[in-house]
Length: 332
Image (cartoon, rainbow, N blue to C red):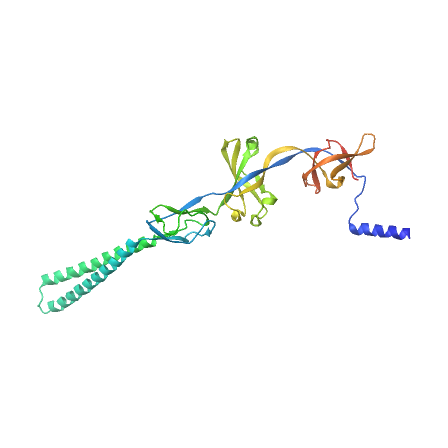
């Protein structure tokens, strides 16, 4: 009965996973590894472009609000001017009159040319009628051009988005009177960067091209793996901090001005990394089994840090305190 029980326990252990060999040793070594610091960064747009009015008037239509995504050339507001509509109506009447005058002048000229062949109209009268026909035709062209100018002014009443991006602010409402050159919306170009604020003591270790990574808790679904690189380090220290810009793919889903945590390089520091399989946990504390100079083993409490996978040490974990260089760990 006892043998059957031992066989079943052995079988369940084998099915649960591989058995680690107890008694294996690992020599603790202090090594210099790149350090990372968590800092706050702000999502900023490289360019903030105002959508300006080209002609003065009253806002009759507004098709966007704060937070809307727009594309370049999209109509975001309409400016109306009643004077332009009145001018257009007056020019339409003038064009109709000029066209009637031109038709009459051409008809008189055609009739005079037929009579001139029989000698009933002098050459001087024929020239006068030809000149009158040319004047009427040019008068029609002038009125048509004036109407085209008014039509262009009415078309310029449409405020277009100067670039693709997201609307940050709309400081006007329908019915607002605006002058030429005023901004009806501020658009953040869809080219976002992370603006870092790094303490002054880390300025020497910060340079263009250094990798950065978004903190996992602040990573949005559109941020891919959240990795990027520093593109610009500003050569000025303000309030004890250095400003830097970093590009990370997939920032389009963030809000402009949103604060996120970013891991940036902060030089190197001495670090102890050991295999996690050499540690045991009891009552909320982590312990390492060390072999002393007399060959005996003793349990030492250690403070576990973040996971540090290294080449040849996939389950590496950083030890903050409790171990020293040269200690010999024994696998429990």
